Amino acid sequence: MPSTTRHHLNRQRRLATLPQPPAARTTPRPAPSAPAPAPARSSDPDQTPDPDRTPARSRPRVRLRARSEPRADGRAPTRLLAALCLLTLLLGGFAGWAYARTSDLTDDAATRNTALTDPARTSEVKGRAEKAVNALFSYDYANPQTARKATADLLTGKAVAQHRALVAPVLAQAEKQKTVVTTTVTDSAVERIDGDRARVLVYADQSSTSTAAKAKDAANYAGAMLAVDLVRKDGRWLVSAIDTFGS
Image (cartoon, rainbow, N blue to C red; front, side, top):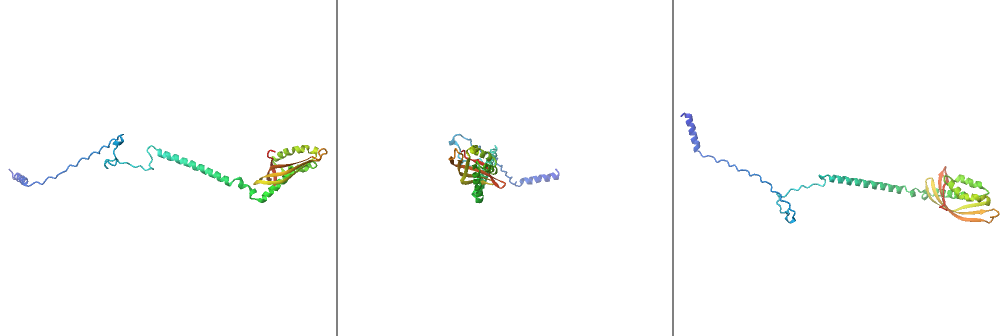
């Protein structure tokens, strides 16, 4: 046997006589345990598991949803949009009502009625109305030109036809009965003045006398109440309407 082989065998024998080191122990890792099955739901309330008695590890985790998080079915955004639209309509309606109410309070006829705030203008309108009524409803058969001049100078608009209808019965008999009609305003009140327009209430006494031979002693007296509307044109107040309140 060669020397190399002999040395190899001797080395093997020496290694066999030496103590061997303990082998490394490997502890097997335990397999992961399967999660405990969730308890089946029961329709019986007595058999419903108490959440306080359920172990913490077996309790299902509940995910809390914030109020602002939209629902999966989209109802929350739809309801919010509808509420905003309704609120917009309500605010718009309120704004319109408030504006109209404010306009009524600030632009009311009473606030524009200068008869309550301008004594000088009120006195002017009152005096003009009284003179106009005295002249328009007085008539002398011997001087008809005065009545015609008053009609031409003091009337305008629909008051021309209204005055003609009121004095027509007197004019029809005036020449035959030689009638003299005298109208005197006893009181008046300015109802309103709105810019170049005004309305005046007038109370008057009226006397009608006939100088004809057959009716020499005939005389009639009556009271009258009417309202005249005035309009200012070219610096003068003219009667634009006559209201006798159906009489």
